[in-house]
Length: 111
Length: 114
Image 1 (cartoon, helix red, strand yellow):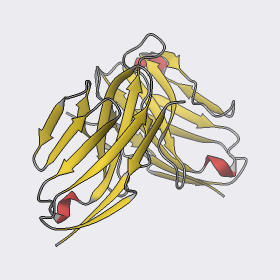
Image 2: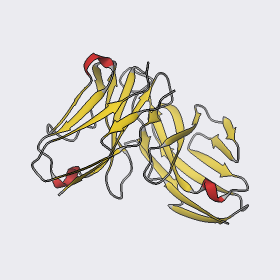
Image 3: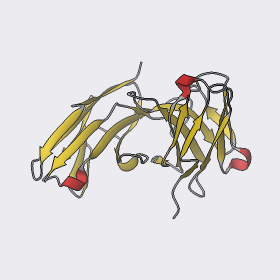
Image 4: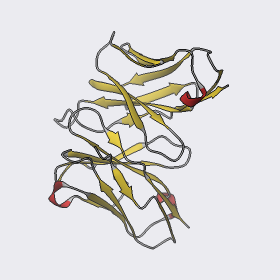
């Protein structure tokens, strides 16, 4: 069974540019989550989809972040415009029941 | 505010030297405590879920236990390949869903020397 995949693995952009991260969950998993780890801090929750609906977006830092999950399959997380403090590793996870399975992450560097 | 604290921040062991990692939590309405292992450059890899005080789970050299205030990850006779960051996370019952967000601790970096 294929695990959670994320693309790209790394992204380096300049302040003010736009970046879109993609997550493909494990097939059949209705729950999809985005998390972020910034340097020296713990992994923090961003938002949770159930199928194509946003169940909880309490962790989204501001309106520069937009997440979508069209059709309840893959999800995208767009940052527009990117700021220096957005640098970090963005993880996606999916679950069908309790356990959340994580992807390898996208390392975002904003210069 | 929900809090998860892991200790120690880093732990260096000799191969075969057993030890324990601690995860203490302050949450209301715990709906699961999770242990993950993370290798450099990779995402967290699921190890265990514990749901109620007194519960224990084992996998190879690892054993996780849970009380009302903390969880321990016991490592018996570790090997160098057990070197990784071990993460603890909790889920609370919020928003009418049992499958909600995880709140993570900072992790314990374990290094096992041959």
